[in-house]
Length: 278
Image 1 (tube, rainbow, N blue to C red):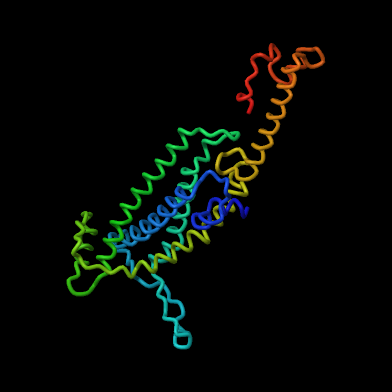
Image 2: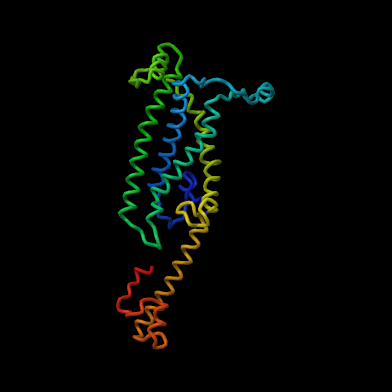
C-alpha cells in the first residue's frame, strides 16, 4: 500500500516513486501543475457561482477560536458557505481529477501482460497535457476575476464584475484593474485536504478493490485484480516454456497428440506463437 501511494501521489510521488516506474519526473510535474490549476479553478469558480446566484458567498456559518483568541493570540477564523463547499465537494472533485489525470498519463489501460501499446501511451500523455493547459487557462481567468472582486479599495471595479456575473456576461479582464490576491491563502486549506486527506482515502479504496466486483472491473479492481492477472501471466508463461521444450525435442507428450492439446495446439507445434500466450 505504501509503495502504491508513493507511486501515485501527486506530491509524494515526485520524491518517493519507484525508480522503475514508467511515469517519469516530467510527467509527474505536469500532473502537479494540473492539480494546482484544477484546485484554483474549482475554488474560484465555486465562489463566482455563489456570487452569480446570490447564495451569500461570504455569509458566516460559524467561527473557530472565538473564545480563546485573546489568550492564544490566534485570530478568530470565520467559516463561510464557500469554505464548507470547497472543503467537502471541492476537495473530492479535486481528488477525482488528480486520479483520473494520473491514470491517463500513466496509461494504465494500455498495459497488459507486461506489453505496452506505445501509441496509446503517447496519446494519453498528449491528451493529459492538453487537459492541463485548458484547466490552467480557465483557472487563470477565474483567479483574475476573483482577485478583481476581492479588491474593495480606491479604483475598485468589483461592482462591475459582480453585475456582469449576475447578468451572465463575460467580463473583459483589464490588466490595469486593481486586484487583491489574499484569498489564495485560503486555497491552501483546500489543496492540503484534497492531497493529504481525500487522496489517501481514495487510493486506499482503489487499492483494496472493494469497488471492483471481486477484481473484475478495470481500475477499480485494485490489488486483488493485479494479483489475479499476475498469477494468470505466470501460468501462461509456464505453459509456453513447456511448449518450447516439446517443440525443441520434436516429440509429443507421451507420443499422443490428444495429450499435447492440454498444453497448446494439438494439430502442430509449428504454429506456436509465444506472443499469443504471453
